[in-house]
Length: 119
Image 1: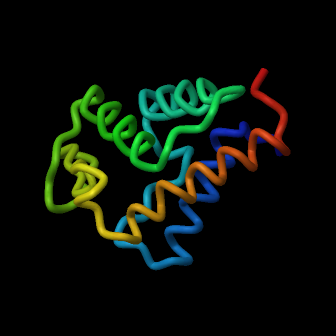
Image 2: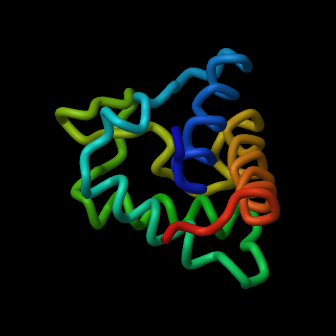
């Protein structure tokens, strides 16, 4: 079974959320809608060959992409209502959620080093 670098990053980050008992654990990759998978793939592949953003820059990019997909701030993550509690400034996130952005970037770096690009 072959998976893309983006799918690898997403699934390992999802497993890290489970292992760390994070308050939000997203659905498996195959259960995410196509619009989400496309925008995430475009974002991740757009980082290839560039200096990676800071965790704050990555969070801001994620937040704005979610807004573009119709999501808004809400106290709970709700895929039907499209609300998410992390749609706040990076500095307002709890420390473990800030760490999640750093972990994401480490996974991007790992994937770019060891997993061939999508074809």
